[in-house]
Length: 128
Image 1 (cartoon, rainbow, N blue to C red):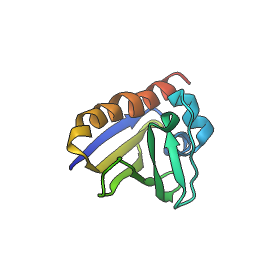
Image 2: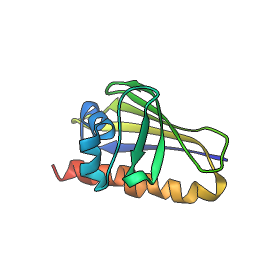
Image 3: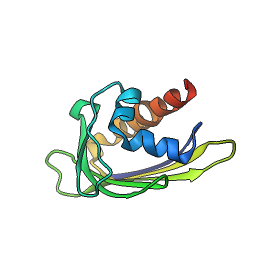
Image 4: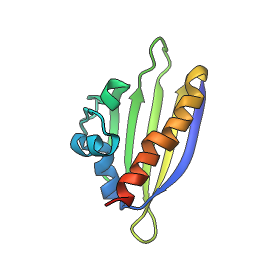
């Protein structure tokens, strides 16, 4: 199992980024896929039409999201923590930490965070 940690800068305010990560309609706009999401701790979520599933653990509006991501056949919890920090000129510094990624999945998830998750968010906010 491996951990992934990276910082991203998005051209949007923390409240805009938080909304994009937690509102199912906004999620569908920037992912282009069906999404199920709630900000209720303990609720299940599904992104990219079910490609990513898990449980929402904790929320701090406009500041922090903590989720457990499911990997089939793995008993260790894979925890995703996204922290949002206000930056200069209405930007957001995003601190991402994803723990317990199965070794065989690590490269796909590392590139997925860059390209499909935060890359897509970057494009979404840049095209506003």
